[in-house]
Length: 324
Ligand SMILES: NC(=O)C1=CN([C@@H]2O[C@H](COP(=O)(O)OP(=O)(O)OC[C@H]3O[C@@H](n4cnc5c(N)ncnc54)[C@H](OP(=O)(O)O)[C@@H]3O)[C@@H](O)[C@H]2O)C=CC1
Ligand SMILES: CC(=O)N[C@@H](CCC(=O)OP(=O)(O)O)C(=O)O
Image (tube, rainbow, N blue to C red):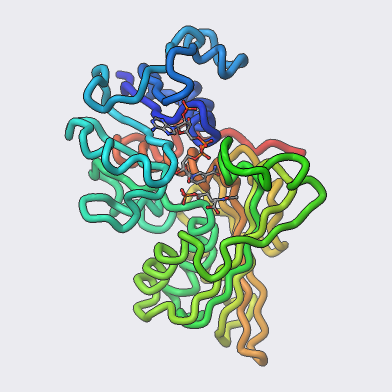
């Protein structure tokens, strides 16, 4: 039996990637698409390559009180634009919110699916983690849980593709200003810091004091790499071994000896993690790679949806990454 699915924010990068994944999902049937300025157009007008069974579906003006019969709703709205409206969605409709309005909010489960799938199964309101937090926390979790890195004074240096900013935004995300250019942004106050600090403290059992996080825009469409520096006396081998054991049963996390590259994850729901450590310098380096639109957004959202719908976690997510 198919699960009736809707996507609000379907014309955006996150919503469009959710559409791509849902179109070939074995159990999901897309019956509702919504937005604001795109309302009234058909999916084929926005996505000329959409499978023909979905081509004629018309994008509705987003109205949580005018939903068709739905089992599951993916919300991919700008952060700040979803909380009020999603509170009006009927309780019987499960929601995965890809945006940032419900992370560590009462009544919502923080959907860090590769780390705590058991907390997600059986829930009906899931807040997808931000793209930088998911790469960071997936790399750090085995070390934090195993006491191989201190939760304090962690420094995260991150690089993201331009699609991380969505389709809108100011000119620094346009071709002329982003091509052949590197830009740090969000220094000391990026919105992802609270969810990273909360989760680090939770996993380690100690506060993430002194957390530093600096993202950089790099001239590529998709992909996100975090390089994380922390204190600890474990060796590289011990870090790798801890991660292999931690993720042994998890389908989407790949532990590699080579430093991971963004292309490895492109178009997939995979996360790659690796480590380098120098016990004599009390230094541990953790690295994490995801596709910001895959594990960083829509792929992770589908994984969370599979968990709350009681489906195999990998349903619709088994395609190999795009290479090159
Ligand atoms: N891009 C990424 O890599 C990631 C994004 N996210 C988060 O996902 C969310 C979506 O991001 P992204 O897809 O990149 O953003 P985009 O700017 O690409 O898309 C935003 C979407 O929201 C819709 N929208 C905006 N305002 C309204 C409204 N009032 N009512 C209905 N629809 C509205 C737009 O519809 P229309 O065109 O019809 O106006 C559009 O479809 C954000 O919260 C973002 O932070 C999270 C992780 C990664
Ligand atoms: C390049 C760029 O701007 N990236 C976004 C990350 C997108 C994301 O994960 O957003 P939410 O937390 O709002 O869901 C940023 O730094 O805010």
